[in-house]
Image (cartoon, rainbow, N blue to C red):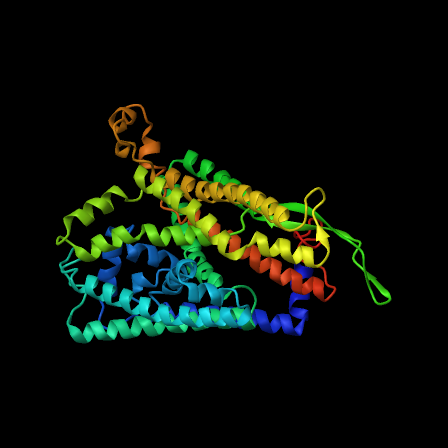
Amino acid sequence: MLIDSLRNVFAIPDLRKRLIFTFALLAVYRVGCIFPTPGVDAAVLLEMLDRQQGTLFGFLNTFSGGAIGRAAVFSLGIMPYITASIILQLLTVVVPYLEKLSKEGELGKRKITQYTRYLTLVVSMIQGFGISFAIQNGGAASAGGQPLVPNPGLGFTLMTVLTLTTGCAFVMWLGEQITERGIGNGISLIIFAGIVIGLPGAIISTTSNAIAGVLPPITIVLLVPFMLAVTAFIVFMERSQRRIPVQYAKRVVGRKIYGGQNTYLPMKVNTGGVIPVIFASSILIVPATLAGLAGENWPFLQRIADFMAFGQPVYYLMMATAIIFFSFFYVSIIYNPQDVAENMRKHGGFIPGIRSGRRTAEFLDRVLTRLTLIGAVYLAAVSILPEVMLNGFDVQGVPFIGNALDSVTPAWVSNGLGINFYFGGTSLLIVVGVAMDFVQQVESQLVMRNYDGFLKKGRVRGRR
């Protein structure tokens, strides 16, 4: 039973300490999302955010658990760290020095991590300056004419940049501590905490609207099965893998015989996880952000931002393309078929029917390419389809035939279901993926100590 599994979790001293440590640091993160940044009228800022969905503010507000809406110290959250990671990984391909570091094992990885930290501070300062500039130039942003910043100026700018940069550095440190001394990936858990914190309020709001008759009953009836189906599909795809059989020849070393066994090489369908989705979302939010910062000085930026806004066909097309690109790009960085084939050859392993060495590397590369394509299409579909259903698909934005399609397209397709619910493909992917990884790590700790895990009938892949 689940209660027995939970009892086993807290019966292991080391696992209990790790869990308490993880939850304690996540609680510290949530507390930091409450304390406001000095000099900002949080009520006026929240009203401005409602009118600027699709910009950097709305994007960060989702992943920070509403911290930006409260003008909190941790408003930037962990997004600057993700941006810095994207930049470093892109530079690893084109800069020989970074490429050499990436191949030097643990020492090179530590160096790249250190560079990522430094770049995170730079990105935080840039984003902090941009946010302070935008909210100071927001003018009378509220309906009552109240300014966002009662006392703007250089002092406010410096204080905001210092506060947000320090908060981001502290959140980055919290994530690293959770990864090292807790359970799960700290950065992913912080994003997870920022997303799920809004779920209870969203459920209550949706239920209230349904009771009040704002939402038709048929909408709720369709929404719940759709959410369950998408969640089940994500779990199925995250568990899916291609098992390539591998045989090891017998080797005589002294008086002992090694090898002579049959095993398999697991290759996940979605090797990149949710990283491609996060990368793509971060890139596509740039035009809207630049347009918001530039204001009326650069009208062509605003036209580009409107062209790529949520609900526009170009946005969905660019989102799908970016997810597929980053899926192949990220997998090419973390998985090298040539190295896998060489290590297999050194240990006397081979794939039946495939020659060792170059042929094996080509076979693995071909299989990996096909799996990555399936995984990329899956990520794009799960990220975009819920957004289309909830926010709609503006068929008028389709070039040349938009007006003709609009006359025959149902209203719910163009306008969405009109549900004010905290549910989106990107958020759902992150929540389900991080939750599965967390449960897997806890279960591996239980099994390692001869305890029953959470799943007794259907074991987690890799334990059979």
